[in-house]
Image (cartoon, rainbow, N blue to C red; front, side):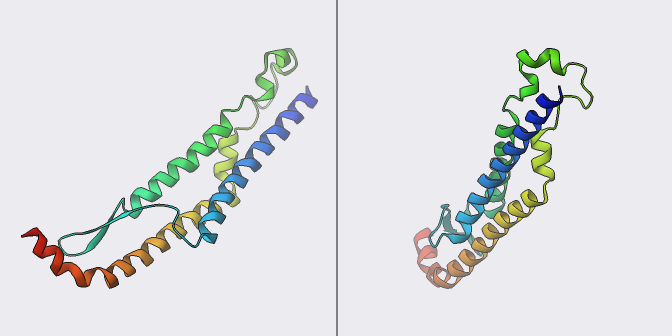
Length: 148
């Protein structure tokens, strides 16, 4: 029984590490790209220039993607749930083993990577807003003329 549990823990650790490596790839891609990874539309509002989707929508989508990544790894069937090993692991102490998504979400490395991804998106939106204000705001009168 101990050997099966050890293998299960090793698989769990591999799943956690693979999730983190995937998250780090996304983070690194965002920080090393010189051109954009996502698209947003710029439009004139009544008083300001706006983007659609806005930063909050991007952050929410990234949150859902990251949670889905952890969910995919959590959905991998654990070895202790395999029918063949049932006689060896039934009535085991500690329940059904560690929960992959719980380990992932509580990891400092995971939290730091998610924070870095979010910060990069926020910074990019700030830069884009400054650019739009500088380059497009001066053409607002043309936009307003078209509206009339």
